[in-house]
Image (cartoon, rainbow, N blue to C red; front, side, top):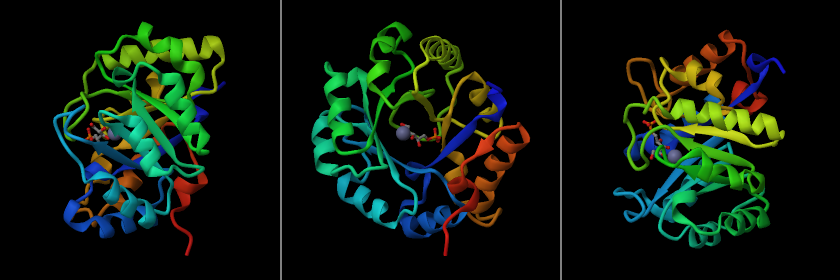
Length: 242
Ligand code: DX5
Ligand code: ZN
């Protein structure tokens, strides 16, 4: 396979949107076009930070043209899965570090028709991840420690991503790798070439007054990927249809 002709899918990050202008930011993201709306759900226990909770997640979900991609940084991910009433086409990822039963959580997510993901922290070794790849639709590979936006990438996480990709290719697994955290204009092509299929576009989802909003920053990430020889999905390319 020509790795540079792969289709790369894009997530907007709601954590990086302006909480005081969520509707404006979601509308701009809808117009620009992304594949997923990434919603970080934090309960202040699994990570030392909190987000708006499942009611806010529901509001984002209703306003978003793209399906939601939930990242569950919570003590009880099964409870969030049940409460969210996941819909076909959505995605949800629990953390490996937070469950003794990844297979049954993945089955609960898939049972609602959604795609099942497992998130892994930078410090979690590859050997602990490999036994669970078969039960997943995607692996969320964090390249920062979870909980906060705006942190720098931990460089050794890219070696881990390369090792995971080698194993996926060797076993021929149909699993996608979603890289989350610290995806910047400077490092995004390196991340994709290390094995990312999907990117959470954190800084690209920040409203930028000088550039005229979110559309131009998302256009930047798309332009760079296409210039690097990668493909975009029709949804990411076209934005919302009137
Ligand atoms: C980190 C979150 C990320 C967040 C990353 O805990 O899971 O989804 O959006 O923000 P940046 O891209 O600023 O690192
Ligand atoms: Zn996330």
